[in-house]
Image (tube, rainbow, N blue to C red):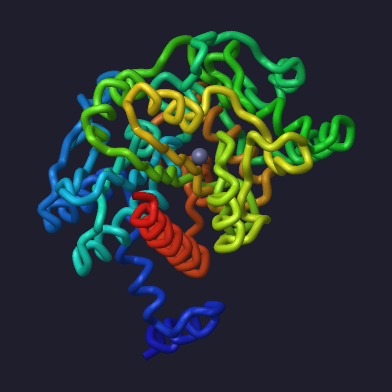
Length: 392
Ligand SMILES: [Zn+2]
């Protein structure tokens, strides 16, 4: 009885969610681990009777994993009268994959009831190492969303990053008492301005291989693999909408649609009308004020849109769907502590508070956050599918 009363109070205290349905709803879609996500995705795709492909296993430096860590790709049957495709990719930033898997599980469930009218390509857990070991970077400490350089120059670091190196990347295991970080971060923001610090810290660096936001020294195995596979997956496709699911930036439980290339004015207008101008961020916008968000080098989106010209896709629209979680300093602190643990402490201790905290800042356990993000993602995917129908 006591348990029931407790459960009732818990459910009753959830904002904006109808009764106990919320808890059942949440538990169903969000996996507890990469391995659970792997099985959930496999089961879902098998139920749909779609093709399932895998990357080669990712190296874990001898740490045993069953099943092995692989990127999974689901491919719906080609729809003969359609030359359009929806691509949804998730988990490029490892630990952000918990949300990505839930989004894909929800979309798969919908497609079980109502088959998609275009080709669908689902890229599940693009960074399986980071997902399994609960970190943002891959097995080489590479932030994959800083690695897709179109010009291939893996060099350079913002000067301010160099000055903040000791704050961002201490060469020691994280201590349980670490209050100075916030003070120093705020002091730097007051001194240089929030946007300048954010862009210097998170925009990508190529000189600190154990540091945060390291873009690598060469093209990643993931990029090479995608370069080989994507032309085949997209063969005979003329129109593509590609949604890349991320979390950790922006207002909590809210989303932003972040695009890099210039968009046709008519489609931009449609996006604004449907999702509000505040949520639509175009990185090619002229002024910093219009852009609203920091620039990053080597992003997946700019690379994909560039490659798509070689793949003979007539139109390739790529958008990051970014869900807000915690304030930026809290997210940065969690990243810093996990990175310290990985390089200077118990790298694979998934129960360590630094790992658990990182997971929380990228995929909060709050049922309200989870339900709002899933509803938004479902809504965006449905709307984009409808647009694809209009394209041809
Ligand atoms: Zn991300």
